[in-house]
Image (cartoon, rainbow, N blue to C red; front, side, top):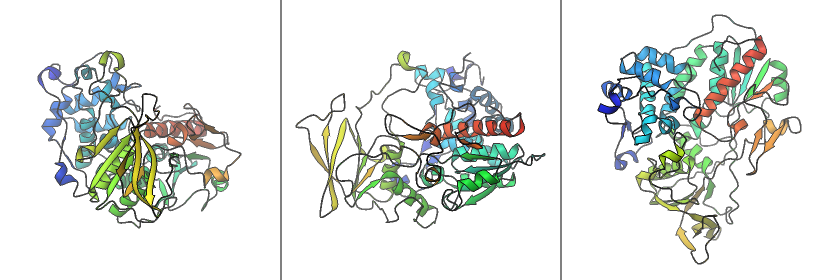
Length: 484
């Protein structure tokens, strides 16, 4: 695909960033788009590798037909490229911005550390399609008379709603927050993805007949029992939002917070909304002029780092209990799977101090207010090493060690004892449903996304939403033309 000799002639290039000194002054996206000819050159690097591991399951969870749309871009056929991309992915402008790109890890050219710039090309296709007017509502021509309710408007809920709406069902999407998007809107900072992209998709879906009910907390404002009675099918896409408990002494000190309330607040500020939010603390959390410690080494921790810098933090230290990974992986041992290697996010590159193989022993303070974080080095089994203790000054500390399941004070509380749940060895609680029909233990109730599989990637949520939509359509109609 692409240019036959492109991978031999053209070096890998990806979109550049604004300098850190400039980008930390605002919350807008800071990626500098590549020109169309530059994107086409990168698409031309896609080789006819025989077995395109980028497709999945080792690469892309939604099975994007990556060589196909690379070839279309190379040949300047942007309209057919977005059509092909939409056949597997409802929201490529989301994944092109926030997906960690396991497809590039699985690329054959990654054996030479120069994979095709798949993520860059994907984002360019979506952005170009909007620019040229290729993305517009696709309402169903035939209506089935069936009504479907979807709870949660994150990527799983939105993908399912769009698929079911296009299949001709009357779809109603219920969202607890004031605007649609779930953690895409309220968890992911604007400097990674501005929210006008969500707004555009919402308008498209409204044009396809999807009805949005925002500010409605199902299980509290509207009972699940009522939805199950009023609709032919209900899909629960509540996400995974309850923070994992750290078990660290001192978490009650003023200045110690879970990561998500901090990120949600700032996203609401940027979106010109009141910082009050259902399920999250309302007291303002601001990092300006402060020393910040972030506990955790994942994407959420990185988002806290970038947000703190933009709020004017004096110093940001990130603590990771895992050993510092190698700069380069053993390709023959791990390819085409996701490799453990040293990765530096754009937020970390803005000046964070990163401490590896360090355990957080205690949050310490004076008069109930955080003043520092007591740490120590750990061995390969994550056991503290005696005599290595040290204290990091901290005015604010954020705990970003993952999520253990959905909020339990609404839908799960109402369905307590009726809905089969599964608790894994780490204490995460998920709603039980397989990945074939996505049906729960309650009649007419399906589930998909993080609430079923546990916290995961946006691209996995989109895939689950699409598959659940297919399962629901088949259950309601006896057959389905929705893609698997």
